[in-house]
Image 1 (spheres, helix red, strand yellow):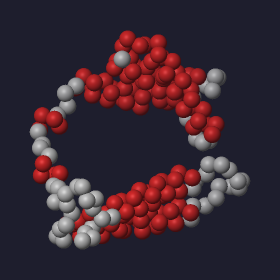
Image 2 (spheres, rainbow, N blue to C red):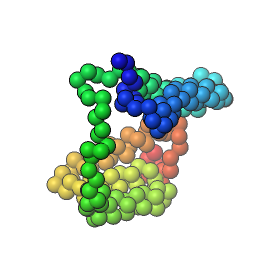
Image 3 (cartoon, rainbow, N blue to C red):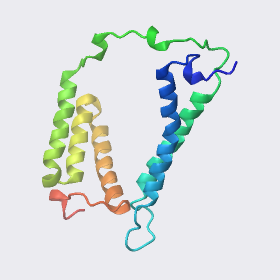
Image 4 (cartoon, rainbow, N blue to C red):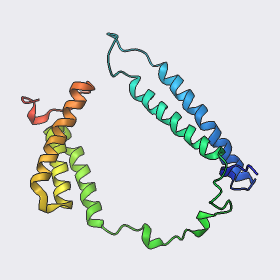
Length: 180
C-alpha cells in the first residue's frame, strides 16, 4: 500500500493540482538558474561577486528547496502517523489572535523606517542606520542602552563597509563624507 503522502490517501482535484505544481517547481528553478547564467560578465573580467552571484544563489536555493518539497510529496507515509490526519480541520481560528496588540511598537517601527528614508541622503547611511537601530533597540530594551549603542554603531559601520568595499555598492556618505 504505497500511497503518496502528499495526497493523504485522497485523489481529489486539489491534491492533484498541488502535486503537479510541486513537480513543476524544480523545472522553474532550473529555468531561473539557466537565465541567471545568461547574465553578461562585467567589464574587467574576473571578480569575486558579480551580477550573476545573487541570482545564482537564489536559483540554487530554490532548486534545493523544490527538490525537498518533491521528495516530501512523493515519499510513502510513515507508519506511525495516521494517513487521514487532517490538521487544518483541527486548527481553530480565533480573530483576537490576529490583531495587533502593541500599536505603540508598530508606530515606533514605522516612524523609524520613515526616519531612515528621510535622513538617508542628508545624514548618510552610517549615521542614519545607527540612529535608527539605536532608537529602536533602546525603545524595545531601554535598560541596555550602552549595548544598544555598541551594536548599532558596529552594525552601521560594518554593513557600510560590506556594501561599499566588498560588494562595491555605493551608499550615501552624508555629513560623514570626510570620514568614509
